[in-house]
Length: 386
Image (tube, rainbow, N blue to C red; front, side, top):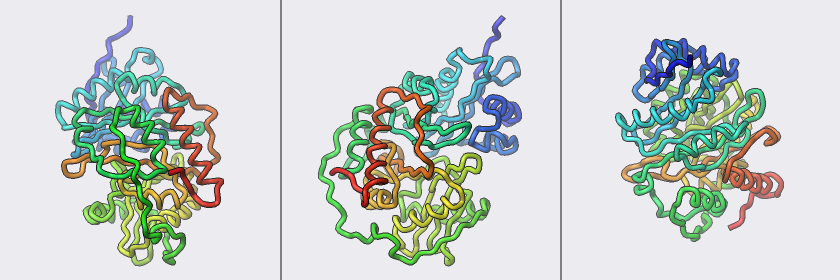
């Protein structure tokens, strides 16, 4: 006889069972170390910014999904795992619906985002059924048993779009990507009146004589980041990257330039979380030189986000060899308005999309990414059609 499955919020004493569940299903290949370290997971279960849902039969945990949220109305849902014997019961969808309803009751959440695997179409269909909008892809973002491309999706409340900042001109390299997102989300058009920056200072290569070195000291990195967080946010909007903490620092000898990164030892994935630039060395130069250091470390994929209205940084990212792969409208609340952000990525592996199953417009996102990749990788100078 099939036993009833109970959904509830996880508590710290569930940590060991949850770790066992991830280890059993993923055979040690899950990229987030929190899912394999009981003490770390137990600490997360006691934090206010996590809302962790488990499914259980009697006292045995058979499913898990995680919501993490910020104070500005943004949340992410991730880490869905189901015991093999309990699949086929829409359990992931049930946990996500249950968790979202519970989270909305205790926190002011306007936007929830999720990434979906593409080794099958099922995760993409699941989020679409829950009302999530498709926003782009992360090409070859993870490497477990093989290369994995993930899709970015988000669930928006009406209030999120009502407070969206739209008074800016869109960089022409973002136009095709934005038009797909606009159609998917029903957004108003952004006028095509972008004017190239008059100053080339931000875009010249190797101009500053900047020298950077790697500091692999996670606790020092986090302390430095926390100490300078207010300064970083005030000076550079691109320092906002939600739900990530740095564990790797790239710095000049005088610490006037610091690049804060999250690096996954498991699959060599890296996120640039923040840049501290007291020297005014310039975004493009810093990112290029940091990327060389990270590639030498063995990083196979780098990612960061930039606000969609910051055209000079977007131009610099393109000059540094990064390609826009996702467009996230109304992502971050600053004051009374929510700002659009663009995800940029760069892969150091040969692109491999043979094992992916893309649903709907996710195929359009891949085609658009490949067009920009060819222009940036095969042409003498990075370019895009205005």
